[in-house]
Image (cartoon, rainbow, N blue to C red; front, side, top):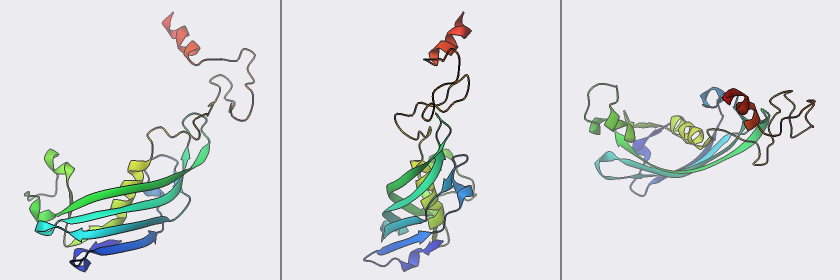
Length: 170
């Protein structure tokens, strides 16, 4: 899905729509969409053909908890404010980006790739270590029992994971 910047008039351009998600574009392993990607973006032209995009993206995805390894529903509700620069303002001839160029987002041929922008916002919103609940007890490091659902089956249950590392010290 692309936006032709020529559609953006002086008063701006509001785009509200939804996209069918593609699970393969999520950065988190074993994650997948549980809902369509809904979004609203207000586009406005700035000087030198720069485009300001301010809006939100909403969806639900399933993530795997790093503590108990169970899948859980995670709500994405991300607001963003981005400025796009035309590629001709980038000042470089090759298609490779240099260090200073990484802080800018460019568009080429008067088109902005909306799908890429929305998926970037979703992936930025995903936590580095997703946890299903702040009170998640995780799994027993000895028997593998999910401590949120059942008691540990070990003869000598480990009360603290740090005890496991004490063995390595001595």
